[in-house]
Each structure stands twice: as C-alpha cells, then as structure tokens.
Image 1 (cartoon, rainbow, N blue to C red):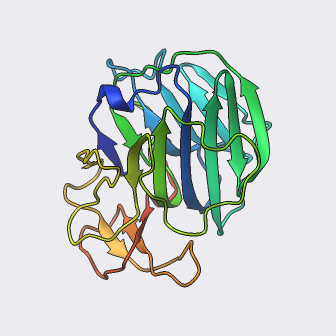
Image 2 (cartoon, one colour; image 1 turned 30 degrees about the horizontal axis):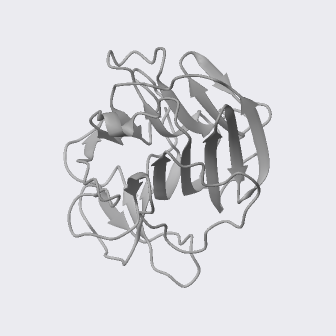
Length: 239
C-alpha cells in the first residue's frame, strides 16, 4: 500500500493536550482496519505513546488506539460504505470522544500521554502495520490544544480552514505539484510505499455539494485532471 508520511516534530505530538482530529472520508470496505492517521514512536515500533485513528476491521466502527490498546471498536458509530461522512475524534481533558456526521458520540475516559516521537502516517497505521485506508480522504485537519467539539454539532459543509491551533491540514486545495500541508506549518509530505513520485489527481467524488474536489490516488503517479479543492484516494483497500 501507499501512504503519506511527515517527519516528527514536537508540534505534532499530542501529548496530554486537548486535540481534535477530523476529516471527510468515503470508505470503500471493512476488509482491514482503515487507518486515517497514525503516529509512531521514535523507535517506529508502535509502542507506548504511539497512536492511530481509524475504523474497526470487521464492523466499520470508529475506533482509535494508543500504545498497545484499541478503544471504541465496539462502541463507536458505524461508518457507512460508499458515502461521504464527516468523522472526528476529540480529547477534552481525560475524555476522548468520537463523532460521525456531528452526532453518535462515543466517549472513553483515558488519561495517557500520547507522546509518540516518530513519523505521522496518513492513510496507514503505525510502523510495520499492513492496515491502510481503503477509500477517500478530504480536509484532514489536526488541532492540538483545542477540543473543538464537546457536544453533538452540525458537520462542516465547506472546506476546513487553518484556525487557531491547526497543526496539520491536508487535502483541501488543488496544487499542480505534490500534496501540501495548508496548516501554515508547511510540513513536507512524503509519499511512501510502492513506486516513488507524487500522488495523482482524479475527479471521482465530491464531499461538498456544488464544489469541485480533487482526489489523490496513491496508485497513479500522473495528474489527469485539475480541481479547485482536494481529497485523497488512499489505497485500493487490500492489505
């Protein structure tokens, strides 16, 4: 499988801070644990302090993991296949809550330091994982220091902006080159796995009515169309 990586930086470590991870996704199947975003330890071993956010490999329920433990695989909302959905995970103090389309909250009480000091992975699990994301990702945003949603909410209906405490924003605006980070931090995104080269643009789906979107297809290395905003086709769905 192919995916994106960002080198570690202290600004990208969740630690014990409040945070918000959110994106629009179009899930194609439940054949594996669909990893939206993850972070390794400095040893890249998926150990203590590492984390991921994604969906369960058999039920499609929203779940996350910290260190060696998975959470909410039996309580998170079920992400439907073949439709655009907004998903979010929020830490507010010791309460970690997942949301589907602004509702269906599932909460877990967890006091842990998610201080993984390894690379960020977009569209793949932590080091050594064969779990990739089977589908499309748009407007992936990471806030560290802000619990943006603390109760059910109306899902965003337009592309996300780099608001206060935005540490990462990927899959928003079309560019003529490789995918870029639009958080203002200008992280370098590197395509990993498979052939070398940039990811490609395709027009397939649209998470926002009336707006053109860009798909980034990890299995095609040449741009075939241009659009005003973007989303990512992470993988074919096989492990």
